[in-house]
Every structure is written in structure tokens, then in C-alpha cells.
Image (cartoon, rainbow, N blue to C red; front, side):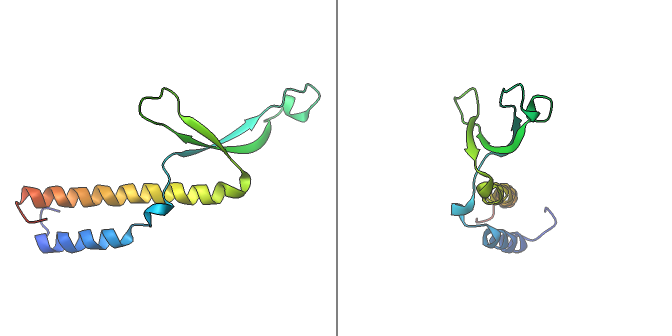
Length: 111
């Protein structure tokens, strides 16, 4: 980045901004896959993996010792995965933009 011109960095920053997904399509967290046993001794799950998969959205929040867990029905799994991927992609883009801004500040350039 140090060998790129300031104009090139600013153009790259604009290109990154255009790649951002709509912020209404982002979700922070993790999708957890679980299998549960029902507790009936005669059920096949007593000796197996369990019933499932069941999906849960896990979200950690400041000030809380445990992540918040919300059940995600099977039909929403792909949507939730897409939202989570959009969040990860948005974070990557923001990190790149921040790196460009730091370099421009280091050069004492106008942002």
C-alpha cells in the first residue's frame, strides 16, 4: 500500500464502498448446528447422534457472560448463513478501508 499513489488508494476505497452489501442484509453471530437427545430410553437417539440437525444463532454481547442463542428453523438456515456471510464480507471491506484511511492520514493527505 505504501508504494501506491494517494489517488489510487482513494479510487480503491471508492471501489470497496461500492462492493458493500446493503447494511440491511448483515447479521453478526455464528450459526451453531446441534443434535439433541429427547430423553426417551426407547428412542433411536439414545444410542446415536441425536435428533437434528437443529440450528441456533449465537450472538455474544458486551456485558453478558453467555452468548444469546436463538433457534433458527431449517427453512431460514440459508438466509441466516447469507446474512452472516454478508457481515463477514462487510467487516473485511471495512478493515481494508480503515487501512487505506490510516495510510492517507500517515501521508497527511485529505481523506
